[in-house]
Length: 51
Image 1 (spheres, rainbow, N blue to C red):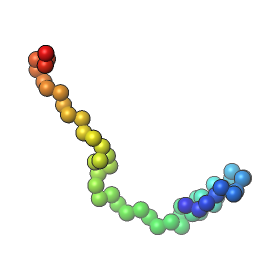
Image 2: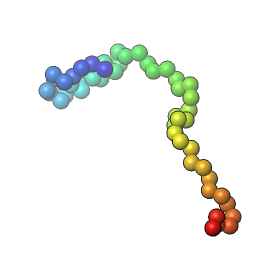
Image 3: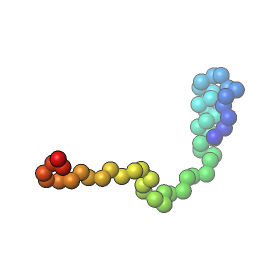
Image 4: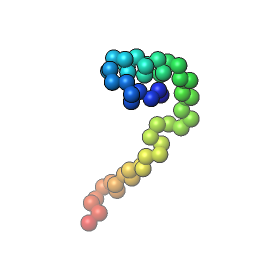
């Protein structure tokens, strides 16, 4: 995205950012599902408590 640190006017900065977003190449479709790297939670044992 365009570097907008030097622009102080909020409206102007928004315009520049939006233009940069439109010009950028579209992102590729995901190859793996979202959240596939998250640690999976194991199900606790069912039935009688473990004591």
